[in-house]
Image 1 (tube, one colour):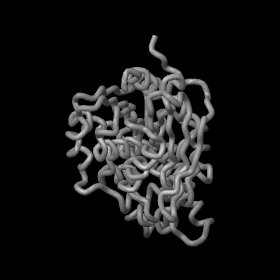
Image 2 (image 1 turned 180 degrees about the vertical axis):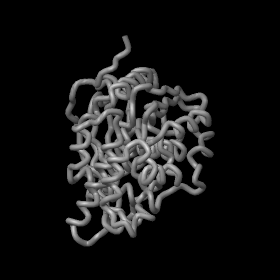
Image 3 (image 1 turned 180 degrees about the horizontal axis):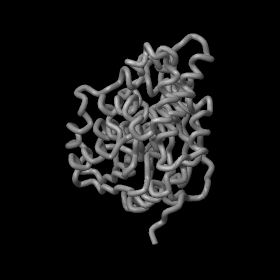
Amino acid sequence: MPRSELFPPIDPFQTGFLPVDDIHTLYWEQSGNPRGVPVLFLHGGPGAGASPTHRRFFDPGHYRIIIMDQRGAGRSTPLGEVRRNSTELLVEDAERLRRQLGVERWLLFGGSWGSTLALAYAQTHPERCLGLILRGIFLMRKSEIDWFLYSMRTIFPEAWASFVGHIPAEERGDLLEAYWKRLDAPDSATRMAAARTWSMYEGSCSSLLPSPELIATSAEDTHALGLARIEAHYFRSNRFTPEDKLLRDLHRIRHLPGAIIQGRYDIVCPISTADELRRAWPEADYRVVPDAGHSAMEPGIRAALVQATERFKDLR
């Protein structure tokens, strides 16, 4: 039977910090087999950061598991920093880490915003990629951002009521700017209150059934501040030109093995986006999990991701 559970917990065999400019220093780690097939885990958000659980999607006897917290996220410093923080720079950061670790080519594994960044990196450096495993597809288009800010209330009206309730009625015509005003406020209490509300809104909408564990993680200060500030910054300032660039440039990577895994009832990143990607990339293996939402920890999503890493073991 195909494996459907995460691999056992594992500690890194190496950790480090990579200064990338005079502002940002990135956390990175390696676990698994030092001589194994390299795989780069790209976390979501942007700004969410990675966790020890993310090492467990990969067979540690086969894969050299490389994880990096992106600019402003997780264990990278400074937390929540938006200066010199863009998609292009994140692509450069991954490439710099690849060179530092002496990796010739690696498998990319990314969900949600991680799928966006994986596509952007692969289209910039196709010669450095073995393949892509993508989950919960997000392409950073205005329609997707507007869905997140306004239309998720169609399915999660209670969560959206809390989200919009943090903003005075006269500012609700532009929730993104209203939140950014608070997320970039000079006092930490205002920033944290807005960040926690934003993050808990996303966490509350990320699973098919309520997940107290996911909501608790969303409320944690480091996660909330990194996620909300970086996410709002990217929504405001880092969309692609042209907007459908990632779809237009798929010809650069269609020769690479690909897997697209999508929850049927993903409300944060609705299935229509994944469907567009698979129509533009028909060579990729496309799997819809019929009883799942957005989170990688949904049982069906988790199983499909592990099975994808198992299927990709023949990559070299």
